[in-house]
Structure formats: structure tokens, C-alpha cells
Image (tube, rainbow, N blue to C red; front, side):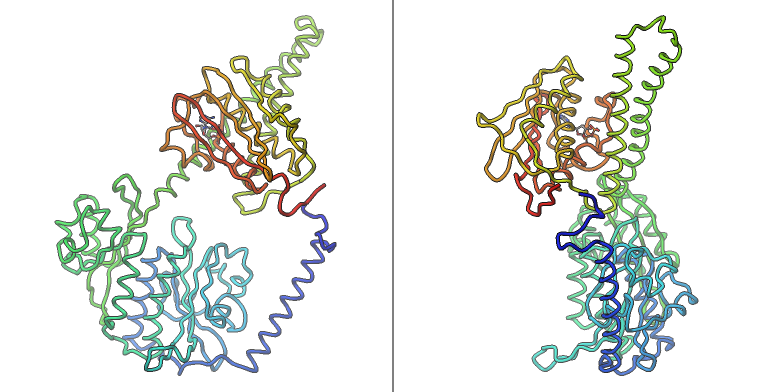
Length: 563
Ligand code: ADP
């Protein structure tokens, strides 16, 4: 069934969209009415940020938040009860004064308003797809993704129970670096950091207050749990804070490193020079280091006290090994795909040219010509399969579901057909089918996608058994589901590579199988196709002995969309 088809309730997608738009308008109207009738309780107007000490506290704060969260930009917005608007406060982190001035939004609708009114954190992975970002004109500031935490003043009674929560504004961090998205950990960190800012901004704490022991403990605990490495140095280059990740990275323990000079704690010469450079200059420094075979994006920024004096350097180590791996795999992938497209095209072109050069059929008889047509036909199939795979992968990458066309499928006949088809590609392998004695039942599945899964696994079994051998496709009826297994006697997969097997662009057998065609997309797609049916896929393998790829398919999907 296609995507534009009627839903189970009978309404078309367009009708639902129209109703949704009307509902959204109605919600916005109701929210406006609620705001007019019950304006949010607001703390006494926060002190003007133009106060010089407060401005420098704010500047140090947004810079620290930007560095720790690896965000490109950070800004605080405060609620102005006289206008009912949320107004960005200068100084912000990596936003110009003009951009800050322009960021003045309604407290009724939009991203900032939603966070302010609901007092809940909102993470936006893709601003372009979220109309609330457009309402705050964030795309104009070059914002792709955002994490937004409310600034809430909490009043407690003597037993330390919260008796009142008053929102005063929101804090935004924009654009996680290295093309990543903000995580749950970022949310926890920002929530803790925001509490401190709230206390200062609401006037509950003096601008240059010393953190209370409880605040210090909470911040220290949060920083300790950060997955990224964190190092805070005094102006003299002594370690004042080091978290577990950073200690592990330098091969030291937290107690032995704390209070020591980086000359003894940091052995890596390049990193040591970088930290010395950061200590000796103003502004932030960013560089990449490879430590213990991992790539770390390292950012160091001066920390300043309320009087604007340098009190040392804050340094964050963010593990971007995976990001770099994916980039490398993507660039390998482009060259592999170009090769995979060129191979069938070269063959098609060659055979068509040969046929055109023999218009009188003087050299090639009918049998030969039919053979050439057969080759052209199967090479065209190969191209179509490759392009379909690329389209499916791009769909999955954009987070779109695969369109399932469920129909009644004779699993036994499909297995026989797929195996018979693959037999025509190999003379060195014996392809066997092992089915239960009782005929397999008809199941409700997407026949083309199941065909694609089987074809992929059998053709991999052939490709990765260069010395031939037996390939067996067996099916077991497990009651609610069928379990398929494709076993080969090929090169196998080493345990350390197993986790990469189903990742996109991933080709395991480097040099030795580069001769074998492939894009590294087959298993990624296969896994997605099996999971779209509600099944699971896994592998058992011994290097040099062979592999078995197993997967399950429920006989009936949970929500049936039968043709
Ligand atoms: P490719 O297009 O490279 O075949 P796949 O996603 O189908 O991509 O497979 C990913 C990698 O997994 C292959 O490059 C190969 O290294 C390994 N692999 C897949 N199937 C097998 C198998 N049956 N035996 C050994 N290795 C396999």
C-alpha cells in the first residue's frame, strides 16, 4: 500500500493534516487566552545585566557552558513582565550584539516560550523541521539543533521542600559541534549549570558569591560523570579539577593528579604544549589529538573571575573517533559506489557495442546474441538493485520509515526461488535448502523485502566463500515466527569486527575482499528490512570456518497493512 493511501480510520492524509493544522491554531489561541487571564508568576524583575559585574559573570558563564557542552553558541533569555516577552541578554557566547538584540520573542509561542511556560527542557535535533524554531527566528542565526533549559527560581521551606517555582527565563545552547546532536548527558549538565545562573540572575545570590559547598558538590558530581574528559587548571598550570575520563586518558588517578603541575600529569608532548599555549593566551583554542588510539576534539578556554582576571584554563576532551570513522567510511563509500556503478555499466556498454558492431549478424549467432542480452539484462538488474539500496539507505538516514507492502507470502516458494536464482551466479558452491517436513505456512510479509534479505545473505555467503563450499539456507517454524539461517563455509568474521557488521558503509575484510564487489550497505539494509517486519537478525561465525546469519520474521506483523 502506498504512503498517500487512506488510513485505517478512512480519513486521507490531507484531511488529517488539515485537522491537525486547525487543532494547532486552536491550541495557540487557547494558550494566548490563558496567558492573558493567568500571566505566569514572575520573580521580582531580575537585575539589569548591564551591571558590569553581572555582565562579566554572565560572559564567563555562557563561555563555560559553550565549552563544556561543545556547543557553537549559548545565550540566556530573561522574561520581561512589562512586555510579556523573552529577551536575549548580552553578552552571549558566539552571538554578536546585533544578533542578541534581534532575539526578542513572544513568551506565548515558539521554542523559548514553550520551555519557559512548561518549565521543561526541550531538545530540538533538527531546527529546520521544528516550527517552534522558526517562530523564534533561530534559523536566521544559523541554528541547526538546540537544547533549551528553563531558568526557574525555586523557593524552599525549612524542610528544604520546594514550595514555589517561578520561571525567570531560559538558556539556549545551539549547534552541538562535529555534526552531533545534544544528548541526555548534555541536558543533565546544562540543568545543573543553569541552576547556578538562576540563583545569580534572580538576585538570590550576590553577583560574586562563592559557591556553597552543596552547589560545588553537585557540579563536581555532574562533571565527574561526564563522558567527555574535563580538566581545569590554575593560572600556574596546576590541576584543580580532573574528571575520571580525563584521568584515564592521561593514565593517572584523580587524587594523585589533583594539585600537580601539568608538567608531571600530561605526558603527551603535543597536548602539553597546547595546554601551555592556552594558559599563556586569551580566548579559546581548539585542536584534535589522538590519545590511546582515539581522536579527541580538545577545546581549552580561559576561565575568568568576576573581576575579569584570568584564574586558569578549562579544557574539555570530546571523543570524536566515531565521527571521524563515519567520515572516512563515507569517503571510501563514494569511491566504492562509483566503482560498483561503473562495473555493470562498462559491461553493458561493451556488449551493446559488440552487438552494434555486428549489424549483419556475421560474427555472433542467435545463441551468442541471446547470451549477450541475458548478461545485459542481469547487469541492468544489478544497477537497479544498487540504486534501490541507495534510495532505501537515504530514507533510513533521514529517519523515514520503510514503506511496507504486506501480502500473503509463501515462504517456502520464496526460499526456493531465491536459492535457484543465486545458483545461476556460481559453479563453485553447492546451494542447499533445508525446510521442515511439514510445508511452511503462508505468512504476511513484504515479499520483495524478504526476497531482498534472502538474496543479500545468500549472495554474501557466495562472495565471502572464495574457495567454494556448501551454502545452506534452512528455515525453522517456531510457532509465532519463522527462523531463517544462511550458513557458509567461507572466511568468517573475527569477534572484534562483529559490532561493525550491520553498520552502514562498513566493509570488514579490508584488502583481502576489496576485489569482491560491495558497498557495505547490504547488511545495514538487511537489518533494517528484518526489523521493519518486527524480526531480529544476528550472526554466529568462526574465522576460517564459516558464518551463519540468522533472522526471524513474525508470521503476522503486529499492525497489518495487507494489500
Ligand atoms: P558488502 O557490500 O561489502 O558485501 P555488506 O553490508 O553486505 O556489504 O557486508 C558488510 C561486510 O561484512 C562485508 O564487506 C564483509 O566484510 C562482511 N561479511 C558479510 N557477509 C559475510 C559472510 N557471509 N562471511 C564473511 N564476511 C561477511
